[in-house]
Image (cartoon, rainbow, N blue to C red; front, side, top):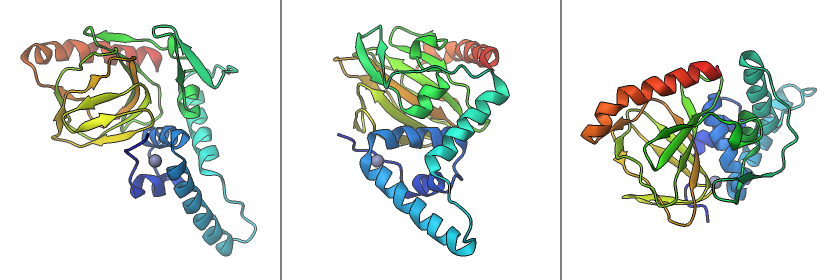
Length: 236
Ligand SMILES: [Zn+2]
């Protein structure tokens, strides 16, 4: 059951195509899990379209999801060749032998499969694959926390959006499961731990890199950032 939803600012900006692309991808991913927010966006789109139609009777309002996919595709075309893949609605994750549902915008960004991503292993419990999104304001990535694994405790230096695509995790503030849209703000710190039953796979959009709290991780941080930046450059 989904317990965490984007607030009305995200939904309004999404419906009016005013949300920066990386955040729009996160909202779009949540909408595929959440009928309640889909209905809300549809209402906002209808109201906006109605107002627009009154101003310009011949104009046709564009569906907000179609507009987003056009932006995702346009960004991909600018930076890398688009691989058109006929992908099934569900992808087989070979590490867990379970099906990971990939929302459409995510599927477009990963060329259809998580296996095609370039993963960086960060400790035993976590691997991260940067995604190529044409949005300089955010770093977007897929995180895979091993079943039962615990991420290093870290502090946020900017806003972070997490959309859970598979599995669940918990921290001191609560438990989060598939479809949840979790927002963290600068100054908040936490230590997510995946539940034991399966790997937790998340779409994550970060305004600024997180700051690990343990001494060892702080010492390793420059190395990790260097590796991720190199990987980002090589996929761009
Ligand atoms: Zn929702």
